[in-house]
Image 1 (spheres, rainbow, N blue to C red):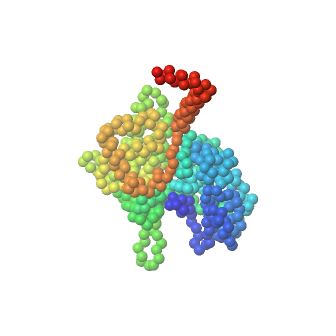
Image 2 (image 1 turned 135 degrees about the horizontal axis):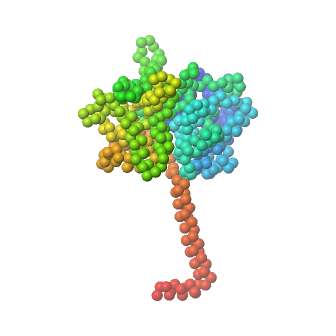
Image 3 (image 1 turned 45 degrees about the vertical axis):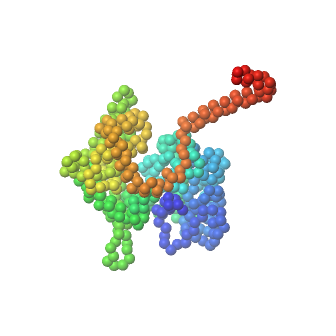
Amino acid sequence: MSELQKNLLSWYEFQPDRSKVEVRNPEDLDRLEDFYDYIVIIPDNGVDIYNAVKVSAAHLSDSGVMILAADNKFALKYWSGVANESSGLYFGSITGCDLTTISKNDIKKLEEIGLFVKAVYYPYPDIRFPRSVYKKEYIEKTGINPCSLTPSFEKDRYVMFSEADAMKELMDEGIWENFVNAFILILCKESENVSDDGNLLYARFNSERAPEYRVNTFIKESDGKIYVEKSADSKEAEAHLERIRENYKRIEKLYKSISPVPCEAVKKQEDGLGAEQSLASLNFPYLEGVTLDKKLADDIKSLDRGNDTQDSVFKLITSYLEIIFDYNAEMLDGEGDPKVSNVDSIFSNFILAGSETEPGTSGKIYLIDYEWVYEKSMPIDYLRYRTVFYFYQDHPEVEELLSLEKLLHLLGMTDESIEKYKALEDKFQQKIYGDGWKYQIRGKYAKKNISFEGLEEDFRLKENHIKNLEESNEKLRRFIKNPVAGLIKRLRKHN
């Protein structure tokens, strides 16, 4: 598998010393023999999925587990303009022309061949380059929208509508499972073993970072308690994980009214007595609440539209900036910049948690991610630039109310300083993703996105082209019908 596709299964806890086989193409089916404790099916394009599952099921041990990762026949990405990866047809599977996918209804039919669903996960954006994995129960519990714009790696894709907005409506209607992009199914042969023993609720992978920064985030549940785990995805990233732990102490006293969530270090179990244990993961408490990113976006949406809309948006954004940049005086240098810089001070890293029924918790704001903290002073305007820049990236609709350029000017930033902050940000991102963005696989191989407006323009140009061709053809037909008259007309025009 590719470095990104490994995310489909890297989180799954396979039991040691048990037999395992992977099925990706028809030739793998021919080589199946005896029985296996784990059968993993990640079909390549062109594989009949139902047949692959049926044949493989005959070789699954009675207590074994089958893991199937497959595209959804009615995936939202196919409706919104991604061609089917196998047939290359736009709208191929949803019109019955591509049989290498499965639907939610097909999953129900698996019981007919003696397989029972133990757990359902949804990889996003798809099974080829998954960056996140969501468990069904987690989506239903939190109401989180798992959808985002899906890149296409086979053909240029059309962007007919916002997949995230459409998914929100489908979730409101209670039919969202029919339109997820893909499934990861955990299957077993014995119905009494159907109870789910997995503890993963959500996973977020950083495989496109440079190896030394590949720290993944998991939300897990154990004994009815939900917690957040960060772990290194590579040996090189263990040092970065240790820095995150140290960052808590660096910013513990940075904010006046915001508390960083504490972390607990989990050490690796090393062989040998007295051996120094390395850091396996960092565990954080799971907080239920609303991020400042979502709250600000909702507040902006609820504004009355009028002549003073720009001013209202500016005041709202400014009020949120004042919250997250309200530092203790002793943590500032002579220029008013923080001595300790939390570079990733974006609104989605702050959560408003607690409730009116829990004394002392109502309205409490927590910093839930402090991965990028430096013990040096950075211009506070650069930090504010990052905050609003990424807010606009996630909420492009705000641009229509107040442009980012105008907002930055209203915040006192000049064109010169904005260019400087852009350069600083590019340098920061290059550090994370490698020189030349070398680890950004999706950016290198994703095909062009064509907007619906661009499609309309294509149609208009083609219509004009067809009209011009028809006019030329009509002139040619007249000339062929009466070439003498045509020559006389041309000679007169020439004279």
